[in-house]
Every structure is written in C-alpha cells, then in structure tokens.
Length: 262
Picture 1 (cartoon, rainbow, N blue to C red):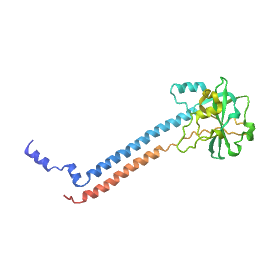
Picture 2: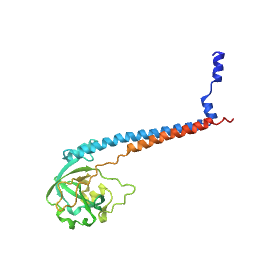
Picture 3: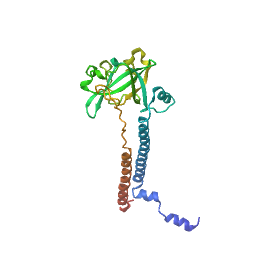
Picture 4: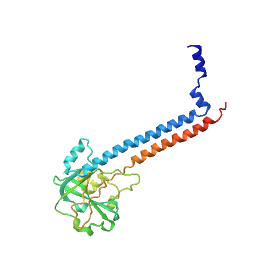
C-alpha cells in the first residue's frame, strides 16, 4: 500500500467510531432491531390475511355445494382433508327425549339455547344435530311439541368439529342439561350412554329450510362470516415501523448537531 493510500485511510472517517462519538451506535442498533421486528409482524399479518381469505372462500364453496353423504365426508376427513363446513345430508329418527341445550346468544331473540338432538341413522349409529335456536322461554320441549319430529326425517346441514373448552367457557353441566361448549365425548355419553362409541365425532348444524313445524327450533345458526382484520393489523405494524423511522431520524439529526464530547 502506498504512503498516499495509508494517509487517505487515516484521514477517512470511521463510521462506527463516528456513530459511537455521536452516541448513535446503540440507539441505531436498537432502532434497526425494532424496525425488523415491526416489519416482520406486518409481513406475518399479510400471510395471515392470505390464509384467512382462502379459508373464507373455501367455507363459502363448501357451504353452498351439493350435500354429500356423511360417510363420504368422514372418508375425506380420514385422508387428512379439512371437512368442516362441508354440506352433508343424513336421514334417521330423532331421539327427542335426549336433546341437549347449548347456551347461545341470538342477534334478534337474545339469550337462549341451541337444541342438539341425537339422530339415529339407518346403521344404528348416531350423529348429533344442532337443530337450531330457541329462546329461554322455549327451552322446555313441552312448549314446542310441534317441532319434535317423529318418523324418518331428512336433515341437510353443515358439518362442524367439536369444540375445546376456551379460557372463559364455564364447565358444562350435564346433570342439568346445560352446555356451554360442544364437548363431543360428554355429549355422546349423554346421548347414547353405553353406546357412546357409536356416536359420530362431528356435529351437523341443520339448515333453516325447511322450517320446523311450529317455527322452533330455528335452524341455520352457523356463522359463516369469520373475523378478518389482518389487513388492519398489518397496516398498524407497518405504520409503527414508519413512525419509528421518523422518530429515529429526528433523534439522530438532533444528536448529530450536538458537539462531540471526548
């Protein structure tokens, strides 16, 4: 290396040293780390947005497709396919004296219950059918006798997975027949006793049409609108990233203008 090159290197500023002298090195590194975190959170929300949009589209397709037999849906599930919200058709006899009451809120009628009734299929197995909503004053089956169907009935509805108990879900009270979440094993035991193993491990949400005689329970309780605020969350993270850059620039300019103290 020539003497001129050595002198040029000695005269050239050391960026890290300058940042250190200006007391900007560690704030700059912290700002970079924060910026990387905020951008990664925004990107993650955009990925969630794409996933949620795909899920909503898939649910809409399944919910409006031609119904398939329950056995066909279960075969697809056994192959690892997601079959929730698949439209299925079944036929059998309702076991009306074993209906269960799942606490629910209705936008029009307020608090009440979803009536879940075992349906005994032709092969002797059972599937639990969410027949629909009843308000509190119609919880007693005797007050809606016309809706307790007998004989062979055909049910078309959406296949739903059972629930897991959420942090704020009260424990189910099987003794009083009041349920707060769809515990399929406990419900199967309540519906079929020693034959609980013959109860299918999914629930069918019955459609609103045809309407039940007497009008209750009211079917079509499935909520197909999933919350989708991922774009809003992504823009929030990106906005915070932009704000962090702006704040750091103002901070760095102020520091840069201060005299260097040794």
